[in-house]
Length: 486
Image 1 (tube, rainbow, N blue to C red):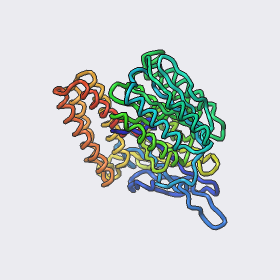
Image 2: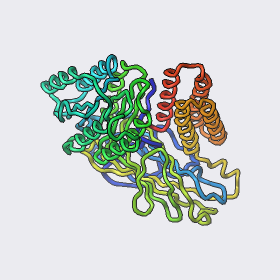
Image 3: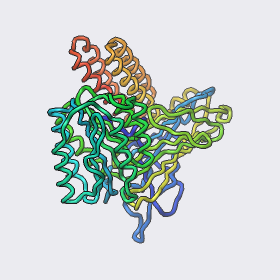
Image 4: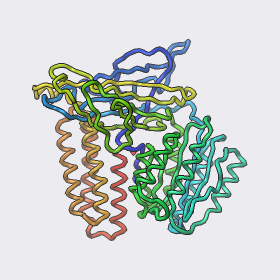
């Protein structure tokens, strides 16, 4: 089983913040230090104080970082990547916010047997794992969508009622995922203000074939839900589900995608999901990237990014948990390169905004400023490279190629898939020769080993039965999604 954890796109950002006096400090990401040649980081949120001195708090350190491809770039450079990352420390929160969960189960005919039996078992476990006063809704979809249990606060009695409803589920018909998602999204959107952590959990083994069914249309439902703090966790079961749709749900809602090769994995996956939700440190999080004068943002690939006034990009992230790591690449144009010649200038202000789950949903902000300059000194450029940004470029390029190769395999184009994976290996090797830190070299080497395995699998594809080819393609897609942060 492979897991691709969504947050949806290129980066996963968890913010930390505190009330109290704000000062400017230079800081490094706590779990993956930024080399000294990276752009300076300016933190604007330094931690809460108490009468007894600073209070230990996982949101009292600076997690967010950003850098161009180097503190120095070659003269004549017009476009570069801005790497953005957040490394969240491992810190168990004292409490987690009250939560509303809409559990949406595919009850079409293809779910018969072990799939629906394990879905019932996993759903029952989920109900028992949540806390009293959490709210749960149970919806199903086949030819149509139905609410089996409307949003209900959990207590001893309601748990028994929901368990009986789960036990009575049966299968028939086709797969109307559009109505199922729409029903669940509306329920969590109406969650009371007290329940700030909101999740739609979808279990499906098939391809939507009733109602609107394109990945773009279904992804738009997930995107709408995130505006109300609702994120989607998708469990794709077996070999027949549409990975492009589940990818879209993860990306558009900054959610998570799980690929399950065996139905019996459902319960353990949902247990892991509850553990992550219980470790929530922030909610309603987003990154705001503001270009400096003379700089134009061109966009971000593989992640939802919305344009705001003044050419600013806003990347919604949703709820964030302890130990998360998210990375993004933003394409940047230096509109006035001459102003960067010979001296360091700011490229962008990167701001992480979020609601602190440990401080009654208090809004907090962190900021980092990425800088660079242009020079004709090639040796200086080589010695001032940002290893973190270069590694992000390499790993995410490889991940996207791997996901494209999975689709080629689905189409029976095994030679083309192998050529694409070989190109990804070349890209990784080129970046490995540039980075200067051991940590990032190891990350690139690990990605290279995964690609080597994917190539060996692809080269053996023609002799495999169709079912095995499809299973390998789904594994490859899930691996790519994981490397993209989902």
